[in-house]
Image 1: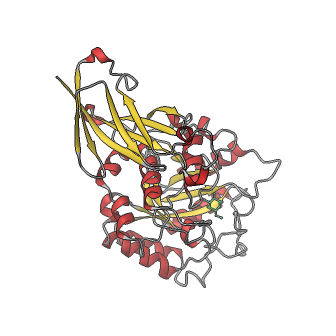
Image 2: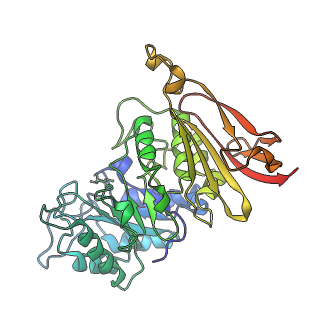
Image 3: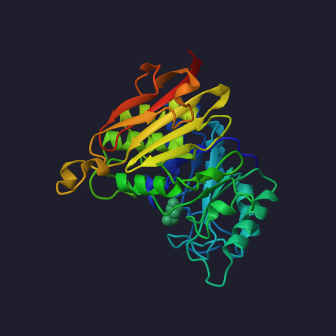
Length: 388
Ligand code: GLA
């Protein structure tokens, strides 16, 4: 399969974990269409772990849990397809999935055949219970081949959490996207750690094979399977989503779209951010980091750019005794020097910034742009550069 844009869709894990069923998947499929997610580009509906029986059938095949999916998986696939969506499923490179269901180790070709008979379009391939004497790269290569020769076009979403520096080789074994980190949790520190851990590795993520920084938590507000502690704020989600868009990684919704509030729905449907994420040139961003502030410059088609400034620092209250609040990012006034973005003072250009959240335009004729950012806040602009 040739994946020419970061894949977009919905995955059950973050909110529902093992609490999945035919009824839920049908409701999600309906809502993806009704609420405009499909039109915005979210096309894959993926069932994560916990869909199968605890053991294979007498022929050694995976079988769906009929209590959860009374009409079987092909029925679900047909329903999802009838909505104009694509259908994704999950298994694991080890002998068991992370939640303890049968894994595909040494069953790769058999399982790929089952998946292709069910007419799936996407397979997430996890890494739990992998034998000590197994070879990780060979295991992912084997499933990749099993899918490629299955007779069906199936996107291969490899998920080994960055083990053996997956960013260096997943493209070579035919993966279409690869999870590069451990699991995301519904809190800002998790978003920050994941994004920062990939900033020096994102370079290999582009057309054909994308670095996957895990499913989105937007809209979870402390509820669901990967919730931890206190709820995120709207600003936290804005920064989380904007970072994923600017880094050009897959956008898989993890919140419950049936109950998403308006703020988060509008955020996930923000046309400008999606356009930046889905840009045809698929260029990973150029990144300048200082203390807790990151400036991302993403080249876009038609000679445009996107610029994101992210204050990942904490609030004053949480760090009362810190010696330097600026280092921690307490409200920063961050100056983006146009020289740092490759426009030296003598370049003699006019910079037209358009805020992707407010649509506000800033015409900048000078050598720098000053933005004020609260802790956890970001600004993202589309940038056009003109002659003076
Ligand atoms: C691992 C993966 C998660 C999810 C669970 C399911 O932890 O990283 O994304 O698929 O397994 O058990």
